[in-house]
Amino acid sequence: MSSYLRFMIRWFSYPVVFGGTAGWMLWLLYEGLPYWPTTPLIAAVGLLSIAMLERLQPFRESWLEDRQDTLTDLLHTLVNLSVIQFTATVLARLGDWVPDAVRTFPTELPLWCQLLIAAGVLDLSFYAMHRLSHHVPWLWRLHKPHHSAERLYWMNGERRHPLHAVIMAGPGLLVLFATGALSAVVAAWLGILTVHLAFQHSNLDYSLGWLRYMIGVAETHRWHHKREFEDAQVNFGEFFLVWDHLLGTFYDSAGKLGEAQVGLLERDYPVGYRAQLVAPFKRK
Image: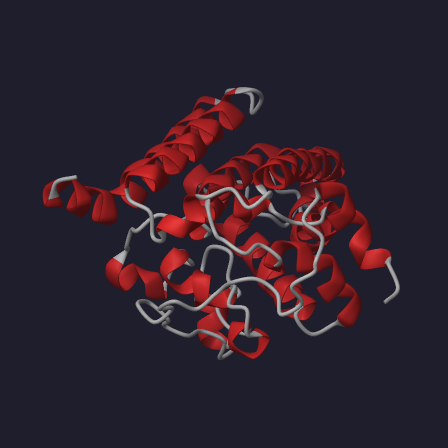
């Protein structure tokens, strides 16, 4: 592959793929078009684009190889995206029941501004529950499937126990819909976040330069998946890294991963999907 193509993939894959899909979803929001099935289809285009780019320019060649985890990750992805959307759809009724007189979410603002506010609320929820999941034993057991991956690639963003996926997003969704946030705005952000999480966990050699200090991309998030647990207590942000900066958990690990391995210290963690669903509830 030519050096020009490598340069283009490294510096423009995220702006073009993520920016394009996010812009497309925002346009749908402004047009008032229904979420289903258009937004999931746009997200699928973004995910498949990342999967293809990984093959062209991987961060690690060895992470391209199946480790009996592809089917497991596919099931995690399909189930968790369905669970989050189902949860959001159910909770959206809370927003519909909020009378205008007591509605506190600023629905009078432009849609793009409402989207940013919803993103901030959800991101704080993700950060708080993510960080707690590294310190509260029963939450860590539910979070372990996500960290059990021994390679990082585009499907790892949704490699989560479905109960933990609800716990991560639940507080933020409750706040948004209890204050009367528009369900279309929240659904649009969840679709945008799906593509970002695929980039965050991708096996793609790309860079955002100085923007890595603001957005949780793979350059810094891979360190969070290091096998050495004590090193992984940084860079919890799902999208924004403002919480990591404010609370002292940001670490600029770009270019420092070297040959370090990712995964859990316990090498016998189950690989199969069903076994990973049961594992948090088993006594050792």
